[in-house]
Length: 525
Image: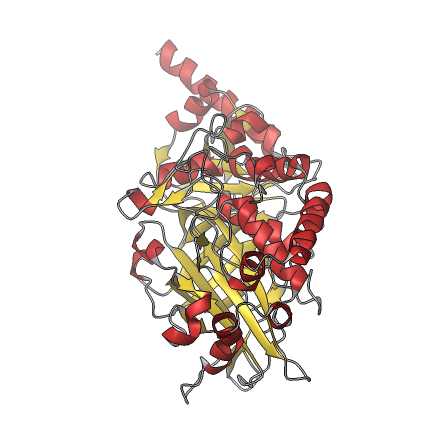
C-alpha cells in the first residue's frame, strides 16, 4: 500500500512539475519541456497508451514535417536564428489540453550530425502517445502525389502538390506551396531504387485553366520546371552539384552575349506522401528560356548530346546522338541547323579562320578547361562527347556560332563509368596516369591544326581561372560547405538508412578525388 501510494505521489508530482514548467506563463520553449527517464515513466504509468493524440507539432510557428511510418517529426533549424536550438513549442490535437515532454538534453550540433533521435511523449489527463523528433540544418520538401505509393511514379506525369520549407537566412517566404505534376527522370539512373524526379508547377487561373506557375524555390530563379537529383551512385553525394554550381558561379556568362549557360542546385530533404524519402538536390534544367531562344529552328536551336557523339561526323550520321530540346519539329528538320554548323568541321578542318568563326572562344575554352578540371569520365572520351547542351544561332551576317552548357556530371572527380559495376559507377576508379581532355569540337581541331593563337588563349584563360575562380583554396571552401550541408545536417546518415543500396563513404575518410587532386585538375597536354 505504501509503495502504491508512493508511486502515485511521484507520478502526480512529476506531472505537476512538467505542467507548471511547460504550460503556464506564456510561450513555452523546447528546453522547458525536457524530462529525464524517471519523469517520463511517471507520465506513462498513470495513463493508457494510444496512437493519435497529436495532429501537428509546431516549432517557432512552423508546422513540422512528419513521417507517419516511423512516427517521426522533422525540425529544420532556421540558419542564423539565435533561438533555433530552443524553439517555441505548440501542440495541436483533438484534446485541447495536450502536454508534451521531451526525453532529452539540449540538442547540440554533434547530435544533429550523428542523426540522433529524440523520444517524446504527448499526453492528456488519461492517455499518452509516443513520437520521435529529428533535427536537420537543411530545407525540406514534401510532395503529395495522387498514387498509392511513390514507387508507382513513372514516365507519365502524376498530379501532385509540393510544400517547401526554406530555412535559409533572409528567405522571403519560409513556406511555399504549389500544385503540379511529377514524373521520374534520368537515363540509366531510372533503374536505381532511389529515383530522380522532374517536377512541373502549375496553378489554376481565374477561368479555371491550368497554367505554368513560375516561382522561386530556395533562392534560385523563378521557374515552373524543377529537377530533384538523387545522387544515388555518388558516394559523397557532391559531384554533380559541385560541378554544376562551379560552372554556374564562374563560367556560365563568360560568352559574347552574356547568356547564362549554367544551372544550380540546393540540397534539401525530401518527403513523399508524408514518408521520409532522403537527401536530394533541387535544381533546374538548361532550357530555351534561359538561353534566350526563339521558335525559328532555322535561326537558332538548342541541342542536347544524349549519347556518345563524334562532332566531326555529325553531317555523316544525320545528327545521331543529338536531340532538339524544347520545341516540337513536326517537319523533321531538327538536324538541318546542326549539320550545317558542323559541316565545316568535317569538310574544312584546316581552314582555321572559318573554324574560329563558328565558336564563342571564351565559352569554348572555359568548357575545354572545365572538363579537364572535373575529369569527366561521362563527358569526354577521346574524340567523343556527351552530356552537353549546344545552342546554335545564326547571326545577322548569316554566321553560325555555337554556345556550350555542360550537364549531368555525376561521373567525375575520380569516379568512372563501367557497365558491369554496381550502379554503373566505380568509386575512385580513375588511375593516376589518366587525364581526360576534350578531344572534340572546334577547339580541338584548332589545336590539332597547330594553331599557336588558340594555345595562347587557352594558357591565358587557364592562368586567369586558376588564380581567381579555381584556386585550390576556393575549391576546397566550396567542398567544405557542401560537406557541411550533407554531413552536419545528419542527412547523409538518414539517406544511408533509407537507401542502403546506394554508394556511400565515410564522411571523414573519403576524398573527393582519387588519383587526381582538385588543385592538379587542369593539366594541359
